[in-house]
Image 1 (cartoon, one colour):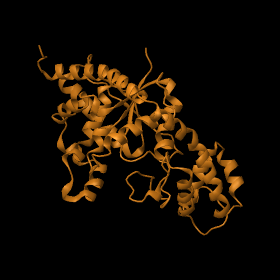
Image 2 (tube, rainbow, N blue to C red):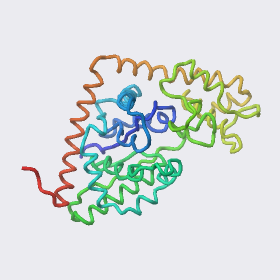
Image 3 (tube, rainbow, N blue to C red):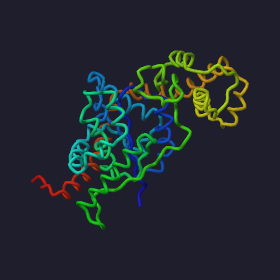
Image 4 (spheres, helix red, strand yellow):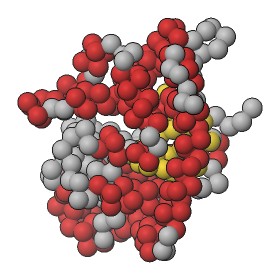
Length: 336
C-alpha cells in the first residue's frame, strides 16, 4: 500500500496572505511527508469571476513559487498548473452531464457570490463545484484538505462520484474513488485586520485587511499600525466582545511559536501601543525566510519552468488514466 494521496490548490487571484498560509499551506507542509501530494494552482477557477488577463499568468507563477517558498518539498509533492492539464476541463464537462442542476443551485457560495455579481453572474461560477470535483476525482485523492467554507463543495464531489459509480460502475469496480474530507484543525482561522468578525480574504477590497506573504516590512508596519483594535487596556483571549483582540493575539501566538497560556500571561498587562510593535516584529521575522526563498526561486532562470513542466507531466499521467477510465465507463470510443 502506498501513501494516501492528497489534492489541494489555491487560486492565482492576488498574493497569498497570512490566512492562506496559516489556514492551509502550513498544514500541507507539516504533513506532506505522510502523503503523496498533488498541489495545483487552480487558474481555471480564477476566471469564474472577473479577472485581469494581463496578470493571470504572472500571478499563477507567483503562487507556484510561493508553494516552494513556504516549504513544499518536491520529494513529497507535485506542483502544477490546473490549465496545463487538459483532463480537468474534459472531466468537468463529463461530470456536468451527470450532475443535477438543483445540486449546484443550492451551493451557498454560489448564492453569496451571485448576489454580488447580479446579472453578470457567469455559468462558470455556478459550475465551479463541478470543476472542483473534477480536480479532486482525477487524482484518485484519498483526502482533501478543506476549510469549513469548502466542506459543502467536497460533499458535492462525493455525491457526484457516488452517482457516477452507481450509474456506470460495478460494486466491485467503482469508476471513481470517493474522497474523504480533511477539515483543517481549529486555531488557524485568521480574521481580517479591519474586521475581526470576518475571515482574512484576497477578495476584500481593502488591502489593509490582510498581510500578504510578500509584503515588505514597511507595508507590514503600516497595516498593523492601522488595524482595528478596541479601547480596552489589557489583552486577553476568548472574549466574544473583542474579536480583533482575539485575532491579533492568535496571530502572535502562532507566529511566535508560543503556547496560548504564555502569550496570555505576556500580553495581559499590555496596551495596543506596546503590543502592535511586538506583533509587527514577529510577523516580519516569520515572513523573512519565505520571502527570501521566493526571490531565490523566481530569480533562478528556468528553475520554476522546469518544476512546472515536470509537474504537468506527472499530473497528466495520473489524470489522463482516470479520464480514460471515466470515458470507457460512459461508453465513448477510443481514438484509433
